[in-house]
Length: 232
Image 1 (cartoon, one colour):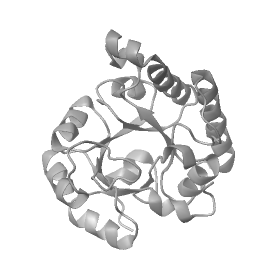
Image 2 (cartoon, one colour):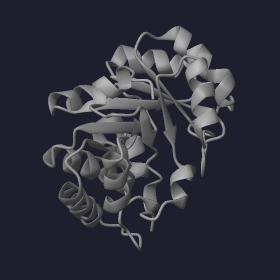
Image 3 (cartoon, helix red, strand yellow):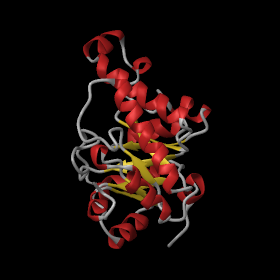
């Protein structure tokens, strides 16, 4: 498989990123993907079998999964962090409207930093909010976008790579522009200089070839990994 800048930046063998998929990620899945040469990624509720409204509980649950993954692999992996729910990222009014959400975001970020996770997969908000903080903690940062203007902002914020999320995003759309991946991807590639990862709607080698033909240097897959033995 072609070696790209994505491999060099994140220290992986193949330019394949496993999407966070929130609830259904776990240490076994993340470690298996990383051991196979890709980049495993924890969703914020990794390893959970029931929800919790306590930020400390969910943060410690994530910490436990990170530590378990380290017993299963010595390869790099990532954690999905929200750029929109950190207290310092929202106005006082927004915080009053959703204080629990803001506290959850900060709890995840702090846990990832304390556990020295090497890569952050940031989403749902402006990368300007946390990229500098994550870089100062020694983390590489990839940010998912749904529009060219978002990609330009992410590049200006200093992220290391951009994930282009088309309207085909599994489970939810990453944005409101409703642009299919194969239309959006070449537009983003032409607009930025940093490497671009194609996400959403890619399920096999044919999708990878198509993404690379349109200028991507890596792919991000979620649903395809739901068939593996390690998924809960």
